[in-house]
Amino acid sequence: MRLPSDPTGRSDRPVHLVYEDPLLAQHHRTGAAMRRLGEALIGRDVPLQELEALERWADEHATRLEDLDAVTRADDYQARRYTIAPPRDGDRLISFSDRPVSGPANPTATDLIVWRDGDVVRAVARFGRLAEASPGRAHGGVSASVFDDVMGYVMIIEATAAYTGELFVRYKAPMLIGVPVHFEARVADRGERVWTLEATARLHEPDGQLCGEASGRFVVVGPEKFGLPEGTRAPAD
Image (cartoon, rainbow, N blue to C red):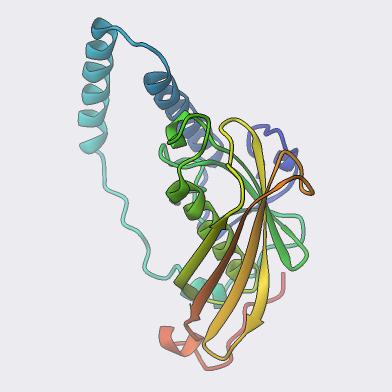
């Protein structure tokens, strides 16, 4: 499965999904269109008449969509770490298409491309006006959520279920609006029940100015907690 083109060229790579989405490409385009609309809404001096028209349009569409069958989140998301093959080297990573922060179908997501590079997860984010706090700068909470999400993908390539137990972020320089921010995350320490992950963020290029560092403690949930035999490992692809 391929996604619409993106500036990193990752659209040429296979997409690893924890949950398949047969409409992923269309969900990607629709989510991107909704994010573009949000950017235009807060980034322009929109007259009252246009705001009223947008309100009516949004309410009409929401009413129609709310009459459709509801999507129930599957409860085996973490268990799948031990039952499906992990992503291959080079795969683009999307755990599920409407995932917060990185799900391309999610209208509130960040413009974020994530992929596996050996034992490292790499990502490129472009923060837009929806993330702007101080003029020209991404909000610290939004950028922290990207750190958390990128480190979470490390646990996916490690085929290990875990939850974020602690997140520490140090801001070294502003993450600028509209500028590519390159994230890199990896395992720093593997404890029996708690793993420590580390990540960095750099402006413009993978070796550009360091603008942020993060560390996270992830609490591992073993396969036995999901009713699987102890020591169960994900099958090789």
